[in-house]
Length: 229
Ligand code: 5GP
Ligand code: 5GP
Image 1 (spheres, protein in one colour):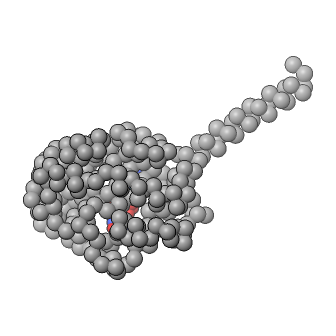
Image 2 (image 1 turned 30 degrees about the vertical axis):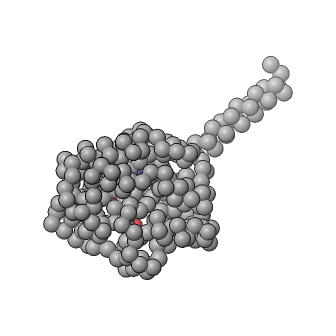
């Protein structure tokens, strides 16, 4: 092989290695968790909650976040401090953010801190797929695709402070959405386990729901309370 073709081969090898490195660096996750919270269970704890400045949110599940995750259960976080949350990039989504992604943390605020935290911690790790506007609009669209409260109510599971079996809750969501959810519980003021968050999975290009490749750890107990809000 002459010198010129040797150099050519080396260049091709370097370019291939480079593009592999770029691919790895730009997408360090395998799927997303789409996490929704029951406001009644965020509030019904020892620390309580505060309603946003515009008033009490609807009695419905709200978005917590869209979280890039790896198949081995680990996840990247805070991936790009050079691209901080900028609310002017989602000004057209504000009305929907306030209704579908309300904050319940104290002191009472308008939600920008919660949304900024979610972008900075999770959104920056999928910025190769979704820019800031895309990240929030994708989550808002996912929220409208599956009506979890309706699925539960159709199965006779109401937010009325009563206790329901974990399996009936999972079956109702699977029946309506086609996908197995993961349920996270927290504790009310008296220490009872209650329905706090619902996890569903989304493919790595954020184009739709998939079965979860892996579930987080933790357990609820076989019967859980569904508090009112
Ligand atoms: P907690 O410890 O309350 O379950 O979670 C605290 C925060 O850690 C969550 O709000 C979320 O930001 C992050 N987190 C917890 N578990 C997971 C997980 O399994 N995947 C991802 N991507 N983030 C998680
Ligand atoms: P994570 O790191 O768990 O994704 O995000 C939770 C952070 O967002 C916490 O610092 C929490 O105080 C804040 N936060 C603000 N509003 C809410 C809310 O309505 N629900 C939850 N789960 N966290 C909120």
